[in-house]
Length: 407
Image (tube, one colour):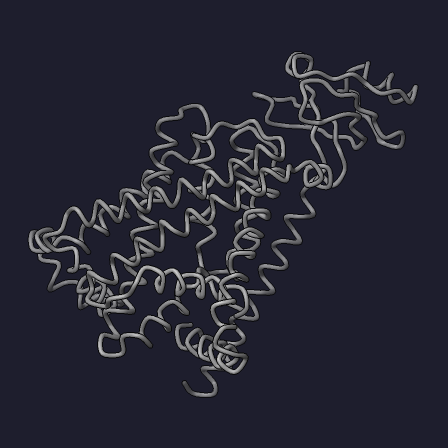
């Protein structure tokens, strides 16, 4: 790579980090950092007013005592009992039933949300994330062997965790795919193109299954997240059409796409991907197995988010989490910030609020899940430490060069 190109790549990586930091800062500025009493009004209660204060008791219970901040300004629309409680400096009893009747309820601040997490929820969430990585590893292991790039399951697991490690230590990386490709090509230099394409094909199948889960959950759960029904279903139709073209030579023949694809701007890459996808030719069971492993991978990750959310005090059902996490993780996978930081928190906040929950819990779930993956990524670095400090430095430099070339 030329010096100017390397410089542009480093600048682009730095801008992504700055963007993520600014976005995280903006999301943080919109969250409640103190407990709030919330008054909902307008059409279907979509507008709200909030005053700061303090919740007495466990905020996730059906009844709490709320002390309105004595300095808070109340507008005329607030119920008289709230005004009286503030004037007297007494705690106001608020229940779920009263909240529905009077149109006001309570919302915990971020510090209270994080203080309330249960250690058992964190442990179970971590276990489910590990289970998800096992399913993802198994899927890639099958694809590698189908592509005549044989690898043992444990070695594939090692490469996957190394990818997670470099996702942490190398700025500008998303998903760990570039380091995975580096290491698998190093092990199969004679089949470089096939080895590289297994990583891309593995990611595409996983993303296809993720969008499919989101579509199924939204369609099966009317009344919640309805605003996402059309865009998510449309994305699934497009993804399914694209995967059908990649996986089926018959479909390409019907529409004479084999002649058209090479002329497209990314035609060469699409042809390489289609060539790699031939490993599934005549093996429908392998396609089904890859999709099944993808579904179990995503359901484990969704289960982790569900456990975290309920550990924070959320009450949404698992079906809602399928929609939220699927859509949120698709958005987080966009390569516009390092590891999706900032983008993911914004997506989770908006999706939780759209589903009728607290945006603060959505952000807490996103951050906590990311911290679980950070812990696993750091554990992946142990695979490098066994090779000595020199190998670690060389691998980091190699990953940085590959990212610059891919930018």
